[in-house]
Length: 334
Image 1 (cartoon, rainbow, N blue to C red):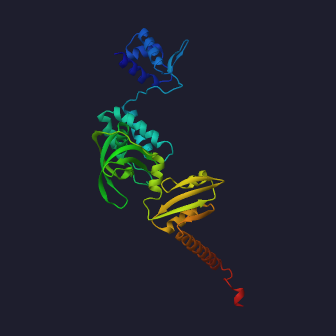
Image 2: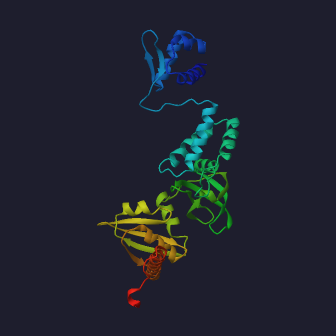
């Protein structure tokens, strides 16, 4: 009974800047003495409820130094759940991971009737531009719960070449890279740590089997190493004449790993399915660099430089012709 009254009072207070005592007692159908006691109980729980003295005074919900539990109505709960789902799959650094934690908590208490509304609204919402494969928020929640409960997961997985497989894993951490989510887990059947792109995980389901965590890796570093160069046909080591901070700002963790060497130098380890791709990415760094390996990449960089030089020269010639200027080598042909 007391809890019901407190929740009702919490739901009413934020709807107006100020409530008089008489208005609250009438609205909640309680006595003035009960109202004062309930206000004191909420304050003890951390809710900042201010008393405004004098004629025209009353009670108002103030701003506190810490976050107390919130009370949401159905519409607010749906809005928050959809917003958290969007943020969890977004690209705002530092927001998606916190959004997932909040989404897991809300998902545990969300009534079934509201789950359907959340799913319908989420399915009907399309982003203006999708730069990567979308991540199912329900999958994220399932994976996060399994990590927290140290419970073995089963799921189907499709790798980068479109090959499907069934996996049984001991989930450890979810790692957002800004554009994608990765699950770091120990593959039970292969007895090895793996990173799995969450958008390629199909139908994750807990097996009911618990496990004991053994020698887990540094999850962010593991993902960076796994997706930075290992899956590609060519691997390169580059000495960049810039600090690690500068290079990391230009190289996503899914593209390569950066080690600060001091004295404004760093080592970049990256990979791609062609040397030409690596050469283009190095040109885009806009920093001085030296190729440590492989030696074939040196030739590819020279070819790229020559190709760009020719393109620049052709561009100048074409512009002169369009402007009606002198043709190249006109002086030499007299």
